[in-house]
Length: 122
Image (cartoon, rainbow, N blue to C red; front, side, top):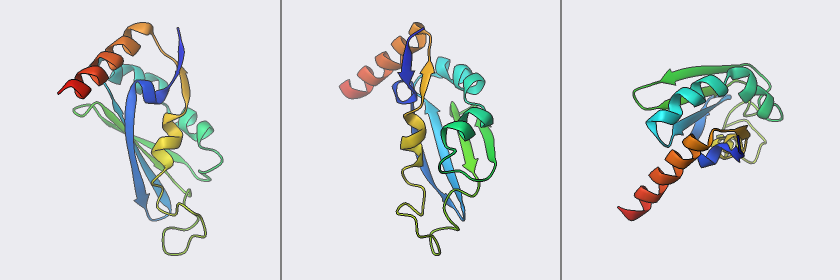
């Protein structure tokens, strides 16, 4: 299996909820969602974001959207109004998570690439 960045098979959005960063990861193709559900556990996300997230990580599944939403507690230095961090709202946290590398079956990479190609055409 090729090792690729999560960005190759998913896209993401992030923001803030007080002192917690909210990161949504959305599969680029419906067949990719079960793979993400299996591989993107709270432990995996916590390990990848350990330099940012000092608290626990919660995961919420959104199967109708093909998405996972992660709440990274204690990741914003107290929140937007009190934090000294450059990104006190967590807007870049999805980008950080999308840089994670995963071993991904070629079949899923091909489906993601095809979907991305179709999005550029329309």
